[in-house]
Image (cartoon, rainbow, N blue to C red; front, top):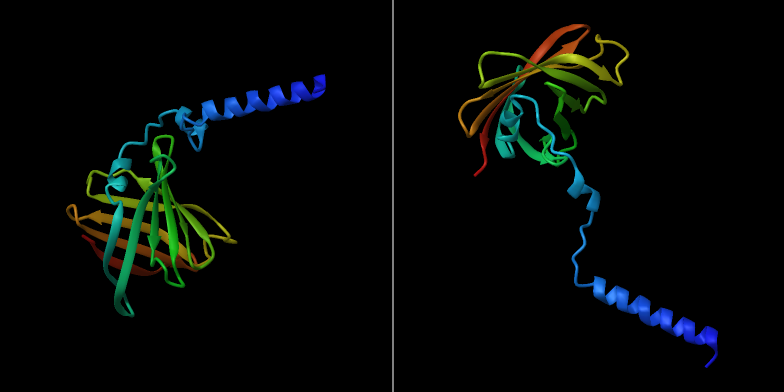
Length: 184
């Protein structure tokens, strides 16, 4: 056997041994994730994390009442809450709640094709979360039709009320109310 061939065989044996020795150690899918810094969420964010789960109820509008479903899930290492309105429906919408320094912001990805951003207003009632319009994308101006405000009222552990304020032509056009119960 020639010297280059011997060296090649030794390398194959060494590489195979290295692979076999490393096979016993479970490797993380994302080793960087283990090194992420711990992020302190803003005050009040835990109220949103308590919503995680499935909710069902009714949507009340000036036009009538219909069934509605809402889902909440944590994402991004617990630093954001994803709300899915009308899951699986053609008009399914997402809202994402997250910290921004000491503030809590929400971006609503609306079926209207725009994305209003709302900021949690400071309040004295821990059961009420009132998000007010800050700005938006895919809108020419604040006069474009958009969701302008959301008030969430936590009525105990398993009851939740949403009141969405819809704006058109720069003023309130209607309020859509969801009365929800946690699905067991």
